[in-house]
Length: 88
Image (cartoon, rainbow, N blue to C red; front, side):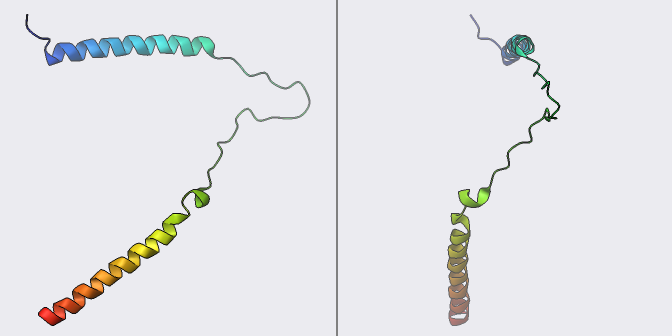
């Protein structure tokens, strides 16, 4: 019995992916709940702005490592320049 062709496999995968997407869409639409509005006189915004991340604490080491890389690269360029004058 021959194996499935690539085209047949692709059609089967596309069909099953559509079925999964439809079932997920039905589940999502069924579980959506409307938020209750406050009954008091104060106004509350419906959207909460996304929390911004402070990357300074997370990537504090990057500046120090960039300095080390710069010093190392400068030293290599200096050594290559001196060697080019001595050997050239």
